[in-house]
Image (cartoon, rainbow, N blue to C red; front, side):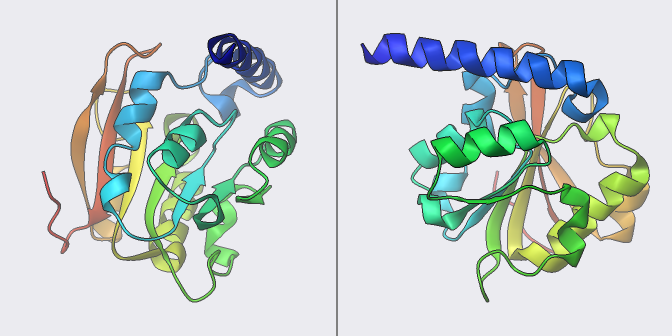
Length: 204
């Protein structure tokens, strides 16, 4: 019964994702939600971190489920979703999480999502390669300057051949990137990068 329910949820998520892509192809960036292999890779280090987590562009909640499965308490998870249909579905499915229906580029103008505490990690499913450089800069700068604690990590997946953050932006914000791995079974295949301050020692 549980397997049938999971299959039904996956099918519903795929249809919802396809509808969202038809509404806004550039804003969604892919015609299918992230697969299980990519979700595991994106969240593989979260269980060893200690602190609240922010997810950017959760969509249908594939990475959200993986984060919760890794042990992130729902009340320590904030979801930033611009699409109103996705945001409403997420609020029904994950009512104990904090859900903000907003453009992630506005994070620089937003107060801390966890009181005086900052996030230990940001997990991003945003299609950065489909966004303008101005929008990407606003997102990344808002994350590192307002919401991510010292030593915090920003995880981003991409369908491109290299880190999706522009080199000029990385230099301006004093950031470094490390390729975590690839999810070759994802459709399309994707790579995951860990981005942090350049003065932070990143574990392998």
